[in-house]
Length: 479
Image (cartoon, rainbow, N blue to C red):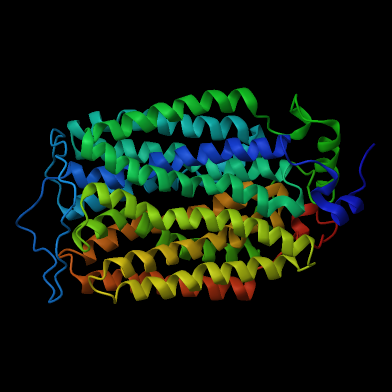
């Protein structure tokens, strides 16, 4: 029996089981995919600390409040066989930022291709190529810094298609009142990948050799690709193991939201204020996120003076909080929309404001507590944790305003949001040549100010309605 769209909207997912369903299986596989995607992205942040020769010519943390070095209770000898390179702070900034030079190129093409050929193969090949180039990272570092920058840029090319491809798949798979839950599960893998890879990379560097950081995660990425190709389908119609009830439930819930036109309405898209509200929020959020993602291990080592082993665990703690927040906030967001009848725009704006202003406050506070290690880690953890609200805020708003073009819209917003990944680490490295507390305060000030701007802009111009240009210009569907 075909389910009526009105019934679906009224009763939501209660009509169809979630356990072992095709849509939640897709979310779980996507979770592991993004887990590996971010593990492949951030492992260099930890390994780089071990790859670079200590430069005694650089002035270290010369403020009046010099943080004492930690004395470990267990004096376990660490591995020192890893090869070292003479890369100065500026070079390290370019190495960390090079990934995003490739990443920005494939964002919009990725969204367009996903709409044309489907997201399954595109996302799978994106992660596979990133994994393969990760395996070549030690060789590239040995050949020279130019080769390493090139390999990291090629990794970025592969990763650039993944988020638009995933958004395009969810436009066919996610019922409107389950979007927050399904997308928060799949994208939470990115945070969990950070949580696991940061301490694990630290342990590998400490006890083995930094080259194994790249070999282990690269091999796991190749293995994931095989499962993805075997188990996933682009749409419910082409899935061989989905139940008839679930297929009809998904298709009925989306029938008033998808466009049948083949051409992309580029001009209305680019004139859309709700889209530019997402751009502003996405850019602002990513400035803070990427700055911390690439430089938190450096801050932990140079300012708070943790060793590589402690560094990995403590650098991961903020992202563990963010991972938990993403999962929980996704459940809360859909509960508020489905059970409490809160409008989509109200939920998206509220979650975005919490997820951007909250982190800004605690990030600034983290710069003022000097060498209080407990408070520093606590404030950074709270800051990053609150950022998890943004996933159920602006992060999935593309699917609210234009489900048929969600991949393309994410490609557009993520193109702008990639700029902080290219510029942020370089700016931060330039501002922290002497690694003083005062210099890092400036880095935190800049990130907090940009976050505040993004939150205000989205609160003013964000929307929760399917735009008229997104449904063949026939009608405006209100969530």
